[in-house]
Length: 183
Image (tube, rainbow, N blue to C red):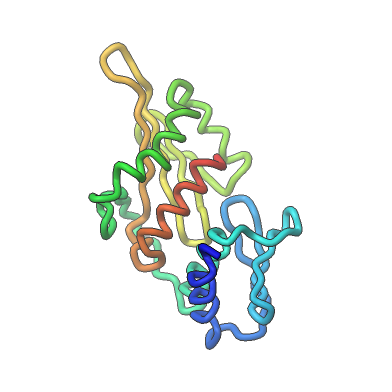
C-alpha cells in the first residue's frame, strides 16, 4: 500500500505517451519490460515483477525518455548540488556512500572489476574511478581514494548534471542506493 499512490501517478504520467506498447528498459545490469497496457514492470533476468520502488523509478525515467532525454553534459555534480541535497546529505551518505566504503574502502582497486559485470568504464580520476551507465544516458561516477597514515579511505558518487532534468532528487537517492547495494 505504501507505494500505491506513487505507482498510480507514475503510470498515469505515461498514459498519453506510450499507450498500449511494451518497452524494454535497461537498469544497471538488468532489463525490464514495461507493459503499458497492463501496467506491469517485469524483470527479464528473473521473469518476476519488479519491486514497487524500482517500478516507480523506471516509470519516471521512461516518461522522460519518451519525451526526450537531455544530452549528457559531461559536468559532474555532487549530491549536495541537487535540489534539497544539502539538507538530505547525511541520510544519503548513510544509504549510499557508507555501503560503497564498506565494500571498497580498504580495497578500492576492486572497483576496477565492475566493468566486467556492468556497463561501465574506468576513468583516470581520484585513485580509482569508474563511470557506470545506470540507465541509457544516465551515467554516475564512483570515485575512491586509498587511505594512508594521515587520512582514511574516501568514496563519493557523482552525477552528470543532466540528471537534474531527468529525475527528481528522491529518485536519484533511490537510484544511487540501488547502485551502492548492487556493485
